[in-house]
Amino acid sequence: MPLPLLASALLILLTLGYAGVCAASPWKTCRRCDGLGFQLTHTKRGKPKSGKHCRRCDGHGIRIRLGRHLWNRWTRTYRDGTSTARSTR
Image (cartoon, rainbow, N blue to C red; front, side, top):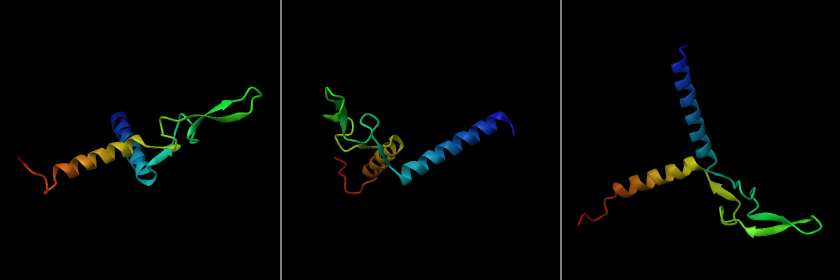
């Protein structure tokens, strides 16, 4: 199998795999707060306590995957563009 054909087959396989992951599990844990919804801070004695509210996930601890976000935008744009109830004037 030639190298360019193998590379393109691998790229297609990875793309379809990521699309499957986005379809099966559109949410992932927030990388900034590790799914807690807040930043961990420590007291003077070293005991962990909850800190600031995580702005990245808005305190929920989960975020939408990039592929799912792009898919949602694509479908919303398509749906709005083909709507029969829109006015042309």
